[in-house]
Length: 427
Image (tube, rainbow, N blue to C red):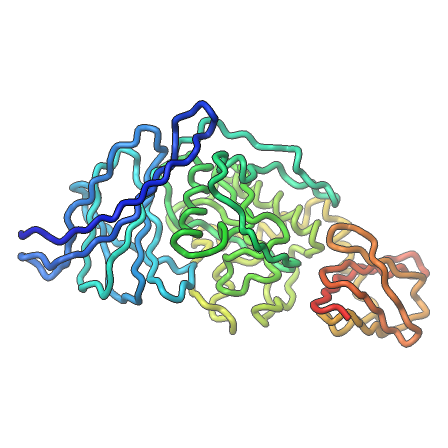
């Protein structure tokens, strides 16, 4: 077999370690590979790529993409092991890239090579990342919010999973008022239980390969039930097939096509959903119109529920065959939590003569029904602050600010009707 063309253009970045006295670092190398036809088969194969030893690495990741569409099949081989298919990454919609799934490798891996049944129309670009072992996981508790009856679970914030500070947040975040919670799995099967490093690898893949502004998810949960803050609450993510407004994305770390989520992880998911539901006034067992998709959608949905919707840009099996069927029980378990009793009870109270339209609206809402039953109104912002409004005898309610608001109609018989109002453009 003749020598194949094999090109490297190396770029090394050395990050500050996990402590000031540590010499540990995350290291990545960008290079490209040109494959030539083998002499004995019709395949196009590369020479072996040597992965230098990195004793401090928790694991390696390999990200592969082409800057042009490619319909062929790519396989990879680790050392002398059997060839494996390199799956396509269906969660991204990059206009100029054909992106393949992130590959996790043990840190003792020495080499990798690629082959394809078709010639590449462009260079096969590869990003090799060595993720430094996490010294110690510390979950902060000082940033917890307790704005509702369901407490916010403790979580590992960005300074926890990326203590070197080299995984910056989006510097132009877009706020959103979530009406729906979307459950995902990460799909990539890690070879390590160093989950802070795993989360950091997702950030690198999403930002440097997908071209996103930040890690795509709002939250992530590992198999031990530890919650990781991604973009955080109330910030638009990149996770729901180009329909990200009005959603919160929660990623369960693991490939649940092949494995089953742990009970501990499911309990953490339910606690996190309960807090999000309480904080955003989302009824866990209900469905409503999701504005961006233009479709009726369960308030707690799986990523695959976005398939075939009018505004969807991807098609996926996420969150996997072993997690998706659990969503019905998760909805029920969250709805049954005592801290959501008051919120869930409003569903029955909401079946009153009152109709509010249009909703969403531009700040002017019409309330129809027997207005003589109403004693007073109170309106709160998403952060719980009471908001000024005007109410006119013809039933028009006017809110001058934009955002998500909670309207409480206090009736003369003492019942309280709670409604969620979304002002998309203020007057």
